[in-house]
Image 1 (cartoon, protein in one colour):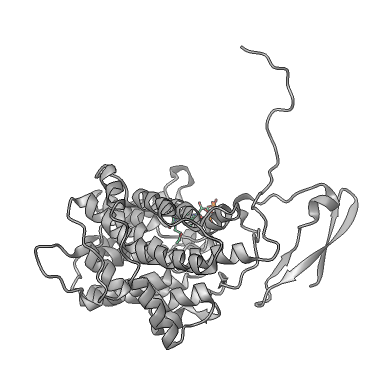
Image 2 (cartoon, helix red, strand yellow; image 1 turned 135 degrees about the horizontal axis):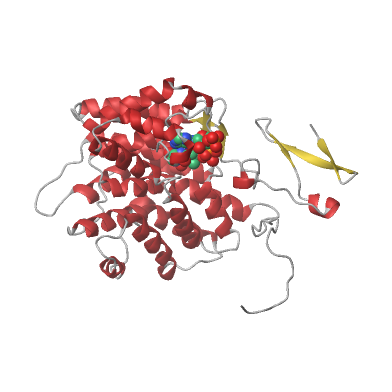
Length: 422
Ligand code: ACO
């Protein structure tokens, strides 16, 4: 598997093959255009490798997901989200000292500049928290300029990880007209998020352990997923040497779409719509099968996983546990979700097209049970995905021979014509 031969326009060219550590083969077309004059065309990039990477391995056919070599199932069971952040960004699991220092740094950079609170005031209460989140992350570069020194880069990474949860929670409090709850140094990363979301100044609030653990798991499962839409966006923007905050803000915007991270919110909205329509879920399954209707079952299907999504498997078990512990067993939306899942897993259309419930199907259900408002679901996803984006941004920046991303196109428009006004 050292090379591949291509015959184009009567001429044979030999292209080198790059084989990854898991034996995945990529035909290297770096010189294709100079050798043949042609480019490749790959709608949606489903066959295109945009980089080599050492961060995350996915085998969609076998349902495998590993961060830095560690299976997601093991990380979900044995690690905390903060350990996973460290693993993704620095490439190895932290020692006790490394973890203590990392936690200390994250705890002591969680406050945002007081002036930034004025930005929140400028948004209408109806603003989607993802819009507020990306705007605020973008504005962080005004407070913490880029620097070529490694210590400053580390500090900006810490600031981003520490402040994103504060920004996310403030945007929620603003949207419901409550006062901001400041980060608390004695709380863990996930407990702090929940405290900032749910505490009010007028009453004590103890973060329930079941919610803290559920959030930790959800964030671990979302922490990286190789070259998906938002991560590729982070790399694309970063490849122009745009700063970390600008690159991550772009990733947040990419994640907001309903075909990507926005799907977790859309799952609940879809279940509500089915309930309001008399809980006739079979009607919606039939609509999803009818190409003319353009209706898709949100939370089903995945570009990469064609057997099952390993994150969905973990969350399916967790959903049962969390709902049990919270004593929720009569949620009508949950009932519809279970029926949809059951019917879709047995239906020939879904089996043939390899459409299985994805991670967002179950994460939406768990977030709802936890009391997280629906419009915050995608924000929670962004909190989880942040370490992955940072790791990918660093890898892109430090890759040997890094170049600005600049795909080409096949032009199908008008050929040269005479300029004439109508
Ligand atoms: N409901 C009904 N039909 C579907 C669904 C669905 N959820 N998903 C795919 N299909 C159909 C497509 O119409 C297509 O049919 P065709 O072969 O007749 O043209 C076929 O299954 C293959 O699907 P594609 O759209 O080609 O798959 P692609 O890889 O482009 O899209 C995606 C994957 C975007 C996830 C898609 O399955 C989808 O839109 N799902 C719903 C949204 C969703 O849950 N997104 C979250 C993804 S997970 C994440 O981002 C963390």
